[in-house]
Amino acid sequence: MTQDEMKKAVAKAAIEYVVDDAVIGVGTGSTANQFIDCLAEIKTRIRGAVASSEETRRRLVAKGVPVFDLNEGHDIPVYIDGADEFDRNLCLVKGGGGAMTREKIIAAVAKKFVCIADASKKVAVLGQFPLPIEVIPMARSYVAREMVKLGGDPVYREGFVTDNGNIILDIHNLEIAEPVKLENIINNIVGVVTVGLFAKRGADIVLMGHQEGIEVIRP
Ligand code: 5RP
Image (tube, rainbow, N blue to C red):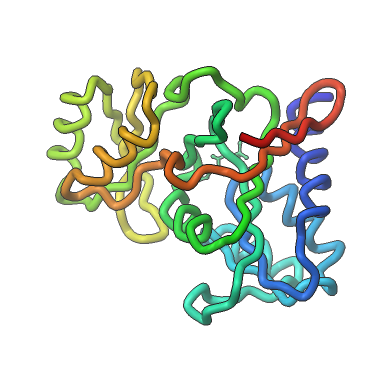
């Protein structure tokens, strides 16, 4: 299977985790987009979805899937989304698409987080993919300096503004040996909105696509 075929395969497999008559959480990115295509085919089985980004909201609406506001208070039995990296404990790095703040909010609300990813996303230690951090614009330089103190090399994502009106710093060269600890430390830096480290609330299941098929990975 090519990487694209793996993404399609895991997106299709995730349909098994969709709960009938429910509002489900839908992530952002190319793998999540494949999932939206599959979801559209069974849209009459669900009440609708909450979207983790404006891009996802538009795609869902275009496919005729009703989109709800999270503040309407629906139970979200399952959230389905991709990742940039995952480790054996199903801690994740997310935010390659810059949507991690809304993704983290939905993941926090959802009962189950099903991550869909191709095999290239599996790593022994998180941090090979630059860790995205959403930052309030006026705190950009301060947060960057704090990240240098933590051993990272911050790079400003030029020309990118998040759905929440903030900027992204991508932190290169971090070896994330203790994901929960680092998530807590970064969360405590003033000006940080969200770090794309999903360790305290990682995935419950990863559906990983590889050459021979799909592996279901639990922590
Ligand atoms: C967006 C994300 C995505 O889940 C992550 O970037 C993976 O994307 P893709 O499925 O395109 O590889 O976190 O903010």
